Image (cartoon, rainbow over all chains, first blue to last red; front, side, top):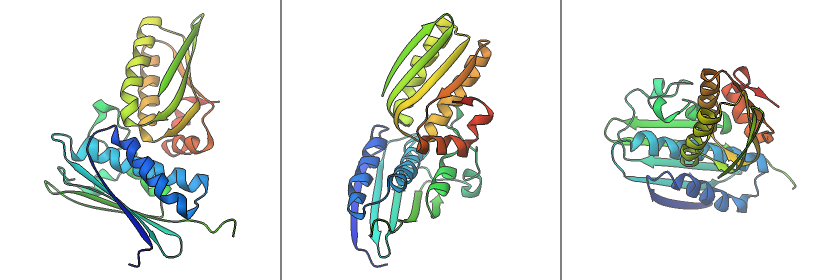
Length: 145
Length: 101
């Protein structure tokens, strides 16, 4: 994978860092001049993935979340959100729309659906007690020359 | 995240501003629920015009308040979501549960 530029950011699993993660991604991607809609899609997808790590991955204990954003050739954006939390027993089930294990927190079960709809490709790798890694790719449009 | 609630003759409008994510939703949920339970409005409209960011946490918030309003004999509406917030709402099919204006 040829990487044109990359940023890596590590934060503890505090819910206040959901906004920090979005801000980091936005600031980094400004150099690629995304449209307002593309940036909003990416911010929303990142927010979902980081929230999942806070709410589910580190449900019982705090830990670190690592966010990596890369700019690849042909205006492709690569995003990875990695936690070393409790992991997901059944990834397929977790990705079903409306499935949630945290109804008491009013989680709608739409996190993965949003990530899927707002990016081009979503991959989830997870193992119980090892953690979860979410990767997303999105190609930015050529606009304004 | 800020919320300003105005209530006139049982018709209330809660105007939100700022970013609505999981972190902010907790406090907002508590404030709205306190208002609904004490004031018992017939109609509550949540104005999203000033919301600059919303992820699926906002969906949970709307669904939860809609349920509570129903339990209290009232109904909920959503006002003025910006286009990219409307996309999240559309994905969730929220318009089947509450009216969006």
